[in-house]
Image: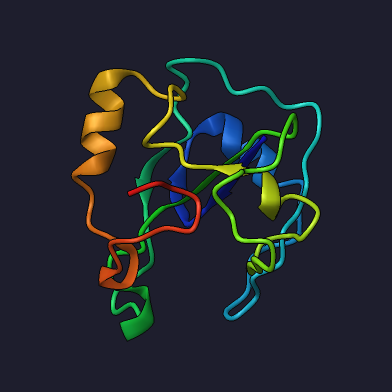
Amino acid sequence: MLRLGHLRVPSEVMKNVLNTIPAAREGDSRETFVTGLSITKGQIIATEVGMIAPAGPDSFGTFMDLGIIDLRSKNAKLAAGFTSNADSRYSMYSVCWYEGSVFSDADRTAAQKLPYSNGEATSDYCQK
């Protein structure tokens, strides 16, 4: 399962999906679950991501929100009392997408070079 956010210029497929849900509003961080959509290798999700400048100080480095959720097992790296702003039914199943085999080696290397969210170099989901 994918969790996506901040798609400034979504692909045509994603535009069609976004047109079926309520429009985003400032300060609204709700999640909308969409079923029946498959994303395939090589498919473009968006050509631009991020927040329209000037972004707030707590969004420094946060220009793409990508969560990958594997419902087959809980993430063993998470502490027992872990909490998240993501839907609690799924946050315990989130995986560290840049350490695993979710992406190709080239894409994983590119992702590891991205700036950290809020300058924070740690993640509850990852070993590093």
